[in-house]
Image (cartoon, rainbow, N blue to C red; front, side, top):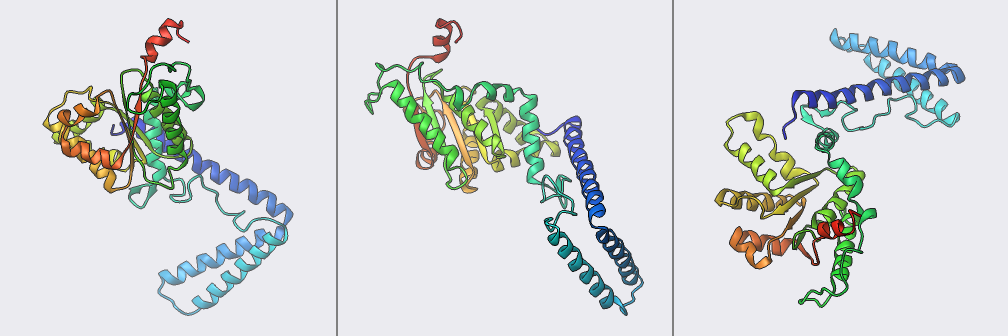
Length: 329
């Protein structure tokens, strides 16, 4: 998912809009405050003049008078702060107010992309892949227990499908609630259509709302991307790994539906292991039975998952088919 030029331009236009809005808002605040406290305008003009003199002295290599200039600027700054406080304005009222103070709405800190830029990249890609529309329908508010039977039971736990779904729902809620305070990973497994992907979408939607970077892949798309990154000779196609390894939450959906081979097995272990080492949370969903997982990938991969993921099983009938019987409701 490296950004195309038009996608990059879309993000940078938003940063330009933010900067223009920040300048406009600052000028509006200045105009209003200068009208109320005329001395502030005089102070700002004096500071600008003294700062220019200081800059010329430094460029000219002149040391004499610099301390006096610094002292005068500091004195004016104190007077400015006192006037603002006396009129009940915050100290930064006449400073630019940025959406992202880290990069000051430029998108970059030095030559590195700011975290807000990385989030904007992911949100843009989500928007253009229509996942936002999915999250409007598949979220905690729309999760229904009506599709889960009270008679179908889990032999291992004795819980019904409905009770099992309630336990999985509460686990997903806890995952979101504790996301910033506890490193955790989830492994949803069970038959097709029992709500694994839906719960993953519920979690993704909540974390996106709270400004976390969430990346969602079907297993097929993830390994296809990793293959392109690994085998392509184009340097620009290798930058995708920082998303996969560093996003706050990576969701790998439908693991086991891709064409499995030694490359896929090794890349899955690399991805899982790297994110564990970096303390970055991951959610995996699969239709595979646990006893088949090691054979499909490797004992080493399953061991890493079993020791670092909370295993969450869902049971029941295929909800998609149930909805068809209920007329799409």
